[in-house]
Amino acid sequence: MQGSGFTFDWQAAVDSLPYLIHGLPWTLLISFGGLVVGFLIGVLAGLMSLARTPLLRWPATAYIEIFRGTPILVQVLFIFYGLPDLLGGPINAITAGIAAIALNSGAYISEVVRGGVKSIDKGQREAGVSLGLSRLQTFRYIIWPQALRRMIPPLGNQAIVSIKDTSLFSVIGVGELVRQGQLYIATTFTAFEVYFMVAVLYLAITIPLSIILRWYERRGQVSAR
Amino acid sequence: MSSIVNIQGMNKYFGDHHVLKDIDLTVDAGEVVVIIGASGSGKSTLIRCVNGLEEYQQGALEVDGQALAVNGGHQQALNIIRQEVGMVFQQFNLFPHLTVLENITLAPMKVKGIAAQQAQETAHRLLERVGIGNQAQKYPTQLSGGQQQRVAIARSLAMEPRLMLFDEPTSALDPEMIGEVLDVMRELASEGMTMMVVTHEMGFAREVAHRVVYVHEGCIVEEGKPEDVFDRPQNERTQAFLSRVLKH
Ligand SMILES: Nc1ncnc2c1ncn2[C@@H]1O[C@H](COP(=O)(O)OP(=O)(O)O)[C@@H](O)[C@H]1O
Ligand SMILES: [Mg+2]
Image (cartoon, rainbow over the protein chains, first blue to last red):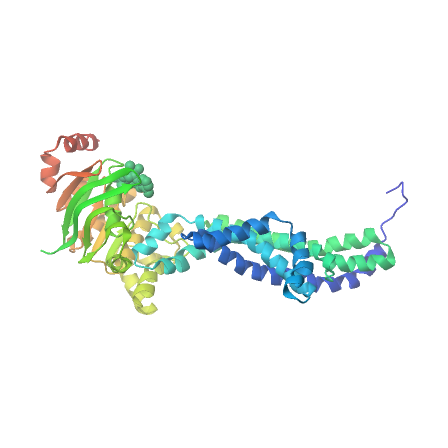
């Protein structure tokens, strides 16, 4: 940074923190709310995609393809600016953000669910039904608990991706971390320091998550079940 | 004697592949039938049809008075049959996320609605019976192969089956563990359990079986008392098979 004579202004970075912090609850709310709903959608669509009847498989496949094949930015713009035309009334930006994360993560989580369930050895199902358990009981007590354990690492990865995706929602005016940073910079012109701090705040969420995931995976390898 | 399994003119296809051909076989109550034959001859498919894990396309199959229709029809009969027929697999197929105790109590509690405490008492008794009474709280992966297979047998017995199916129960085991599993099976047989056993353990077959069935390319080509089949095989295919497996 010699040429430009730039020096990192620690004071400016620290000063921005109380302001940026206001964005954190929104980032967390949209991520968490979106992921919880996304998980439910993902389980539903994932299981539908495994069904024998095409009547269930088709809608799930269409949903997955559409939401994995388009950018989440387009999805949230569509929900926020496009859907009101259809609904006849505006959509709250937070709601639009949660919906976008839910629908987008749901598509990826469906694939996680599908893969998790398919990864369970077919001998498990055979043992279950041979004991007289119904297909539903076999799924609930035998297949699903095992699949869920295998799904946790990819679900954690999806959580990290979705948390970062919420940064895009600054475009629809959600006061999340990036938006708070932009507003702050508009008055102080300390872009370097402020975006640096925004990045630090994201890392403060994602790194602990990563550590937990690594720990979980290592634990899984040790017990091998 | 009443027959528990009654198979007549059964044919089974995997796509174009004709895997079971005009199978006629009955198993009486208390009878131990051992099924032998080369790999790929259809032994597994045959016993898997008996509890509906495989569908068949022609013929008739009755298990404990319940007719199991062709092409997997009649779900209700299937549910009844599966509660009364236990199955032991080559790969054990224990539930790895459940303790040994939970493996055994799951089906009695969920299928028959037996109370947890009673199911656990039964499970402990069965574990004693198969010689691993002190392993109830362990997870399957913490046990040896022989112990796992004995848990699998106990798990099936907990449903108080009228018939037990065994599909090569010792083939995945280290040699030193085969004996402990065969011992449990031998005891079961002596207590009068009706059993259909696919195995390559010819010593066990000779000693325990009431009847030996030799399957060749999807057909039953010979069946009879073990001493007859082993010492005086009539069919040349049986002779060839036995001379191959009994050589070592
Ligand atoms: N699920 C399946 N799909 C297609 N073919 C199968 C299937 N299971 C078994 N087979 C075929 O059926 C034949 C009999 O198999 P199997 O009953 O497993 O024989 P065995 O138990 O005597 O070794 C083999 O040719 C095998 O390849
Ligand atoms: Mg086999």
